[in-house]
View 1 (tube, rainbow, N blue to C red):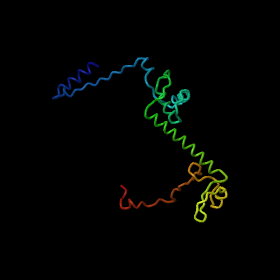
View 2 (cartoon, helix red, strand yellow):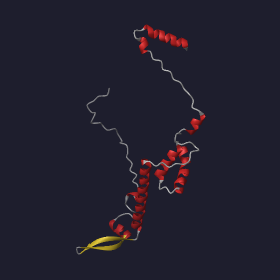
View 3 (tube, one colour):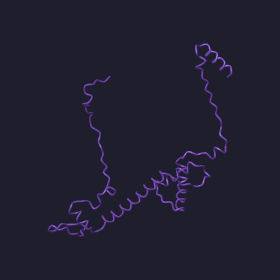
View 4 (cartoon, rainbow, N blue to C red):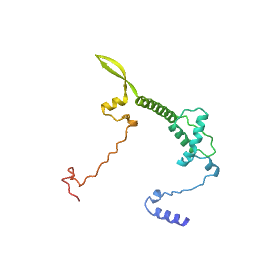
Length: 186
């Protein structure tokens, strides 16, 4: 190896300003000590995250920390990056606070959805009807009203709407592309 460096240096010296452009890049690889490898951060793989989810959920329940699936998942990802013997820690940063807020909003939406569905599923529903110019609240039978209006016997609101499976068929023949009509293929 020393002979190779000597010949390269000699060749660089022969050129005008060649020795100034001569750059020796030396890479040295040093293995880390075992203790440092065991205490360093790890990659949060899906397996490690799934392993930490029950630990984090139990910790959050024990310490009365509010959270739902999003905040528990984030805490599990953070915990999965730590060494195996590290105690469970729930982050207290802006991301965690935002995820807790998202979980609260999800719980509120789920509750509203259940209440709305109960109202829709009830046999009689309060409806305001105008009689002689005056609005009068009346209870109407929901199934009779749906039948009279020709509506199906389930709620038409998005969470309970049957999905439409629309298939787009391929054209039977190729169509001429009018945008590229004047161009020729090369």
